[in-house]
Length: 146
Ligand code: FES
Image (cartoon, rainbow, N blue to C red):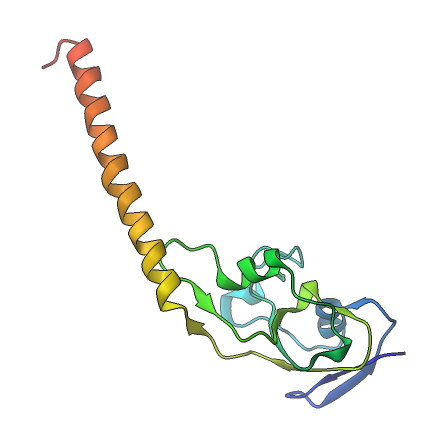
């Protein structure tokens, strides 16, 4: 049976092959979440991107998917996070063999993606605001207020 080693907590747990890393962590009292995300998270559905761990030795981990990468980057319109290839969402990792994991990997901001998101958000606000203004003028004109 594979062994999961939580390096920071110095815990080694034998698990069934294919076990979900998030469930294993929580069952052993290892909380992958920080701060407010301990309460507010997607409960293992791969959406919130908050159950991050660093897989130090990744031979026993399933591979990272595109949707996992998107969740890791985050969906906020103002910034995007950047992670090393070995940072994973614990809820998306199936343990296939022995694996070493560190909780609470360091967060960095992806400046290129952040600039792109900010520009897109600004364009939506400007054009959306302009469109709303035109619609308001049309409605006011129809109501004979102008
Ligand atoms: S619990 Fe939300 S992404 Fe893993």
